[in-house]
Length: 60
Image 1 (cartoon, rainbow, N blue to C red):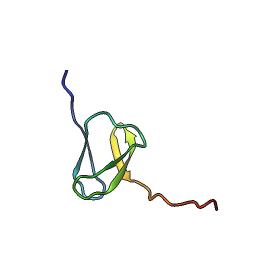
Image 2: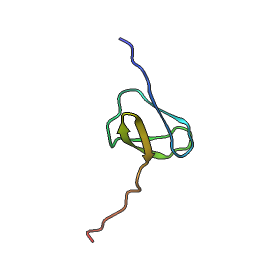
Image 3: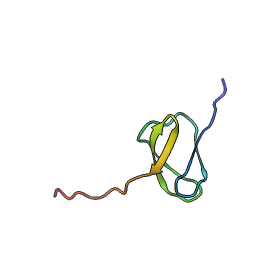
């Protein structure tokens, strides 16, 4: 059984971002070239966008 690597393009630096298994919608990955945190926003076609910054709520 062969395992194919799944690739998408980093929206920040246009480098290939590789997944060893099928990514899930909403999954966060890191670009190996520029270090950007990316979120899977679509599975067909596989699309990545910059992940939103996590902000503290502090109960406001």
